[in-house]
Amino acid sequence: MPFFRPFQILSAFLIAAPLLSAAAQPPAITLTPAFVEAGSPELIRVSAPANANVVGTWQGRTLQFFPGRAVASHGKTSGASAWYALAGVDVESPLGPSSLKISIRHDNTSRELTDAITIHPAHYQTGSITVEPKFVEPGPEEKKKIEAASKAKEKAFAAATESTGIDRPLWSGNFIAPVPAQSPASMTDSFGKRRIYNGKLASIHKGTDFRARPGTPVHAGNAGVVILAQPLYYEGNCVMIDHGFGLISISMHLSRIDVKPGQQVTRGQQVGLSGATGRVTGPHLHWAIRWQGAMLDPMKLLHLNLNNLH
Image (cartoon, rainbow, N blue to C red; front, side, top):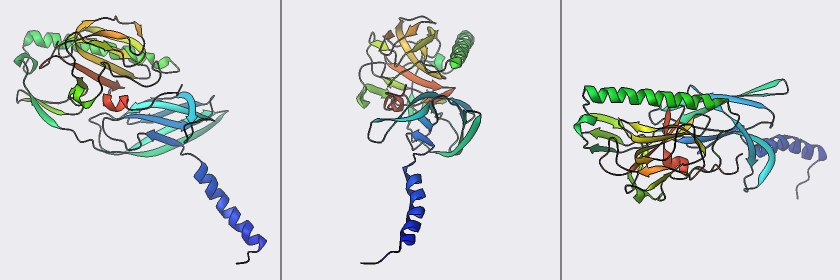
């Protein structure tokens, strides 16, 4: 058996202790999912005192954090404080490195955190669709309707921006699908698909289409405030819900609207009935997620665990 002198044991302990301490410390910033793709929603977590002031920026957008509880690796809530921000990467975002910056101010002290985030490509399909010619080459009357719809959407997005004055998001817990089925078979078209309309107009599908017979109840994916509820040119009968902190869900092509602007809704509350209004090839529900102008994959949001955060 080898013999170790006391000072050798002490030296080994002094060297190993900082390493063990560093290994035990969780990362200052964590993103879920850790592999960041274009179009992906991201839950950002940073450790900070509960009474701190936490702000951040990423991809030229402001991150709005709210205080919550850190969750230990074994699923038990720990006593450490954590701050969360629900953000995301636009489907057309530039790929490659990006810089996430967070500032923590507490008791007249400040701490600056920076993390290099690589944005990876998401692989989307390409498909062709045939619609009425007026939706590809609109005439003068259609252009007036398109302009009016654009102004209505701008007004709604501005109303959502005003909600940034709140200290917590309006949503709580996991988001749910707007119609009952969530299986891949329930979708007619996927997020991010490159579309060619009538062989001429190319665009990116910035939502998820759910199979839904006309008259199927459509529900709010989470709590929030209605910021738009009216017919639009391409979207048809449309309902937009502001979930706070720049996050908006959009339900399109409804046959009936059951809510009004300014109305508060709860998760699962009926907001209308599915239909085939606007630019469609048949009855379905188009559901989109927007965060500060970035269009995110709705199905990835549905799979993101947001329970017990606040």
